[in-house]
Image 1 (spheres, rainbow, N blue to C red):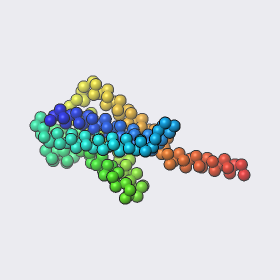
Image 2: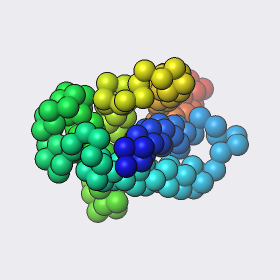
Image 3: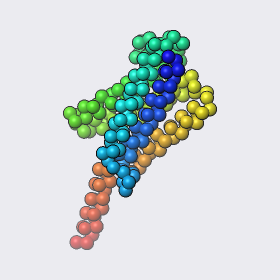
Image 4: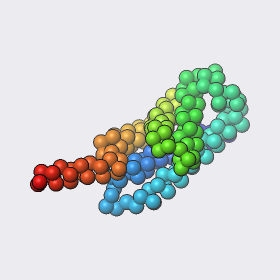
Length: 189
């Protein structure tokens, strides 16, 4: 089970980064000439759901394993583990943030958009915390291949977040274009 816990933790981390990247591609429409919004949204939702399944399997495998004792308290209570207390606590907090983001995404149609959007921003923090958790609590963190992949994925997630800030959402872009057209029209009058 220790192998399952390690593998699902790593795969879930990769899926979380993929989810952030697809989400940014959807909201910014950075690939506008070649993208399809419905396809980007479907991929984003699918990858996010797979990441959540990976996290559930990761937690269950930790509880089922006997290499390091993880009971329900250790996997659900931040600071509840005596083994690498803070790195595990960071993982627990990331898990709760991701559960909040995923749960509110399932209820998105019943929530005010601003509330959902505010909560959805926590996904960036959750991915960052999950990366820290893997780097500090993961038993594979000293493996060179793991380090290269983790650094690459972290850089990719950061690039996506920066793109999100710089490019803005497709709604913001449309508002900026409309304002520019208004200014041009006002200048002609």
